[in-house]
Every structure is written in C-alpha cells, then in structure tokens.
Image (cartoon, rainbow, N blue to C red; front, side):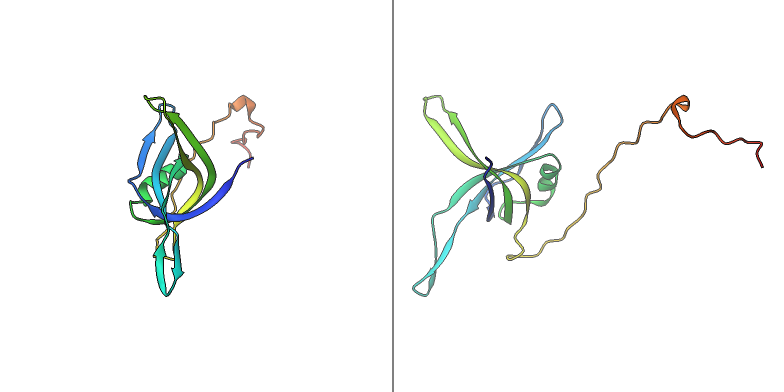
Amino acid sequence: MDMTVTVTGNVGSDVEHRVTRSGLSTAQFRMACTPRVYRDGEWHDQPTTWLAVECFRALADNVKSSVEKGDPLVVQGRLRTRSWTDTNGVIHERLVIEASTLGHDLNRGTSAFRKVNRVIAAPVEQDVAESSEPEADATAA
C-alpha cells in the first residue's frame, strides 16, 4: 500500500538536477516543514522536520527551472523511507517524498505559470502499398 501525503514547507537546499545514462531526468532537494502554534498571544515555531523530495521526468525538468532555495512549496507524492549503512556499519534512514505534483504555496506569494510545449515525435510514414487510401487519378475531371 502506498502512502500519499501532501506537505507544505520551504525549499531548504539547491535543486540537484541530473540526467541518467538512460536519459531519465531527475531532480531532488531538501524541504523544511516547521509548524507554528499560537499560544499565550504569541506565535511559536515547533521543531522542523526535514524531508527529501525526488522528482522524475518532466516534473524534474520543470522543478529545475522553477524552484529555488527558500521558495514556499506544496508537495504531493508517495512517502518513502530510504535506508543505508555507512562505512562504520551504522544504519541511517531519511524520509523521502517521491513527488507526483508540486507548486508554489500561493498563500505566501504569487507565481506566474508558463506552459511547456512538449516535442511530439512525428508519425511514421506508411508505405504506399500499405496505404488504405487509393491514389487520386490525375486525369479525372
């Protein structure tokens, strides 16, 4: 079962964009989520939760061009735990959101949307023998 989450926070690192050998575009960055509570007439920050955000394909390309450190974002995607063992044998874990969609948090500012035109491959031409349409007779009036 997948756990889909929606998180708001600020971009806490520069976006790292890469294209793999197979041509898959990826982007990742860290996101800081700091809840605030109003208590005794004052706002208080709660402890910050840090998440890694991973993006793939067209989303990764658009994130590279649109997101900067400090931007307020809304991110939706699948929550994962990544684990690894360091050279001392210590196991580490971090929370990762595999983003399916994200955007600027418009409660905190404005944004201008620019549609990206995708290049679509030209259709493959059919052989004349395979064509189902008869050729027009040049002598017909």
